[in-house]
Image (cartoon, rainbow, N blue to C red; front, side, top):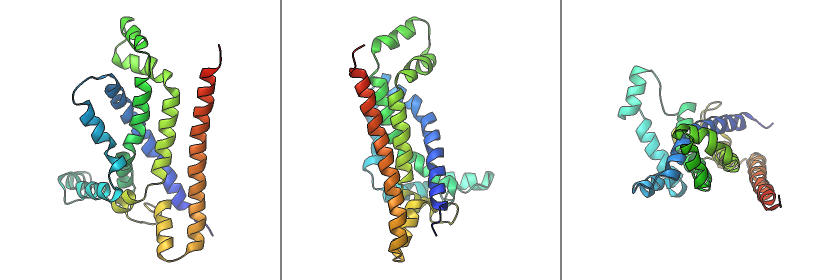
Length: 226
């Protein structure tokens, strides 16, 4: 019988991570799209690191940083009785780092595509930066927002290396779908591994299909004569 718990944990993790990253990434993406600072390439490089960095490397450094042997981990453990590794909280923290560029980059691209005159007109009308962001910029990059949310959600569901190193494989808490598949292969239960993998394959395909269909319809709508 198929145990759906790992999928529920994966979806829960993806939902929470996507929500947190959207709140965090909007101001960062807005800043990067508007600044001409010499530090911009440096900040963009740091944000994009999870794309090229092996998940095991990222997971290792997150594990070292959050463990009780580190100042951060020891502080939360001593004063709040909160352990930041090998629990669901650690999965959320690790996922936020791992999926950060997949949220920020589409949002930044959307902000950079906006007509500069629109932004300047907002400032001329007396709106400050926050009002311009919330009332002018965000409503006009809806396609970028949708793509950022979907890609981040899907990317988080497919995590393996980072979540395994930081969260382990605790039944009902940190054992996500990708880790479950790995363990099934280890014990040579290929039948169940096929079933779980097929479900993950279907989820990935449907997600990408939705993104491409949305882009296709949106671009087609833009080309239609008004």
